[in-house]
Image (tube, rainbow, N blue to C red):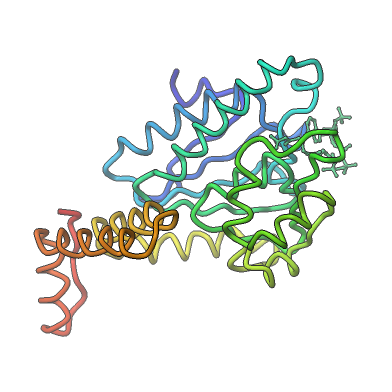
Length: 264
Ligand code: CAA
């Protein structure tokens, strides 16, 4: 499979080191089907294997939705075994996303529901447009979340708020999502990409190894108890001192100039 063969995704380099993945099924508000998961897995493998990639942005095509959930028409007639296989495939791809060596920002540009919210939660952080709407509306369909929502949402905004969202299925608008810590920033829709790009460009100026190891310590450490988690940080910190970038970063500071990082 090559990028141009994708049926459900756009995947492109939009600036040096910055890649954009677009969920692209606007007629069904970018609903996730089984093809999307195959293509996502393939695209993420390419990102992980690309030394030039520094930041990944993920958004939805059109102005109405990031992703309105898993594809209900595909799920309607599934057996229990098929539904569990879908859940397992999604969990695997979302974990692959979470463990990417580079930061991933979700640009939520409209409805972000069910599996869409779970996809955004597997990114490192979320920025949203003012018209963004979050929700885990699975209970409306007689099902639970299946792509990690019960766990990642609870960890991000706390079990009580996650419980409220999941058992009521209610929509949470951008301003409330911001006050709950579900999103980091809210912008007018026409500024969302520009703000994401500014942030991505800022990250691209930093030491790549330091960015990678910082992300790894946060992602790997957050489910451990404090002592073990801090050991991950300590090893990352020590490892940085084996790099040219640490020498360059500290020398540049002392020489009062901008560092030139090489990622080694
Ligand atoms: N799956 C399949 N198709 C979907 C979809 C979904 N999750 N969400 C929207 N669509 C389709 C609609 O069927 C419609 O198609 P047609 O034009 O062919 O009729 C098209 O997208 C536009 O949607 P609406 O006409 O419904 O647009 P609206 O503006 O009236 O409403 C909405 C927008 C509130 C997002 C509404 O579409 C909606 O509630 N969608 C379903 C949301 C949902 O329940 N998501 C959770 C799915 S289950 C899940 O994700 C499980 C899990 O955790 C893994």
